[in-house]
Length: 413
Ligand code: 8QM
Figure 1 (tube, helix red, strand yellow):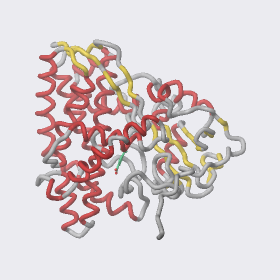
Figure 2: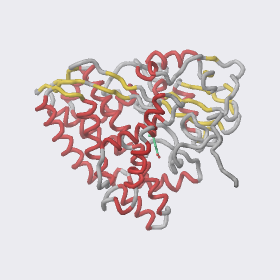
Figure 3: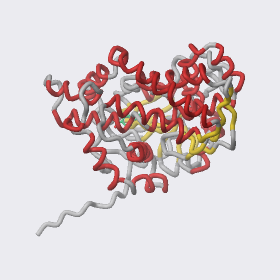
């Protein structure tokens, strides 16, 4: 009898040797301290060189804007199909079947991407905007009545989980499982640390529920989910691929927007002058969100894998290297952004990397912007001041930089 046993994963990715002449930095970018308060790490990463070698994980990291952008946008040399976390899918089995839009290269990428581009096009969002605004107005009224609250559960989590699942067409809404699944997806991008293991432990409860919600029968007509299945009806993708793209919506659409909104409240509470500017001109809601993304980078790092030996800005990159692209560092690079650390809601930081760049840039960014601008518009119109009501606490995440707790008071005008 031939018993098949899964071999233990000796190596998660190819352990490259330190390249000649490259700075070696003995740091754990996935330690709780770095993840919770990354500013000093971002600055040192940029200062040490265009690329550094991190022995603990035998990988390269970059955090200066030009190199980070180059690695991120050149899909031919720096592939996504080998995984966008530390695991090299060529060597180790991914924790779930790979995403057919994120963890894939051209030409396969084009087909799924074009479906998702259409489903979340600006036109497809016109009808949703009213619903987003009505929900935002109602939530902000309720929070004003409350006065003091924790903006993480009561606002940052409450808002996207009240509008996004409906937009997808989910018929059973389980906020906790949606949030826990997001934590699995993003913590899975890091090493096998306590964060990853704690999130993964929820898999048996969360994953079957998520997969069930992706089925055609579960999805209400008119939503993003039904539009994806319409692409299957049209023969563009298979029924199974449609289910996988709905899974992508649920993977990428919740934690990201929850984090972006929480971080926006943190920025505004910490910069009362900027909040008053927003009140005077609520049309700065979207630029204020864009600046929040630059300043706080909700998705702080993402990997690529060098599929060939190459060079970036004269620096030799070995074949098979995992490259940790620290988007949070690039978004604060003083050589790219004048007065980089200053939160300026009118900056309009075109080219920030918080939505990525290149063919894999965030396909849901219009949805994220629609949610955030509705909410920040409601706050600008209704709230007189946002004050901290306790110390904000950051939550370490292997790929997401989010608040764990943000006690604030909304004052009436
Ligand atoms: C991150 O499952 C997916 O397709 C997927 C998961 C996570 C993301 C994107 C796509 C970047 C927000």
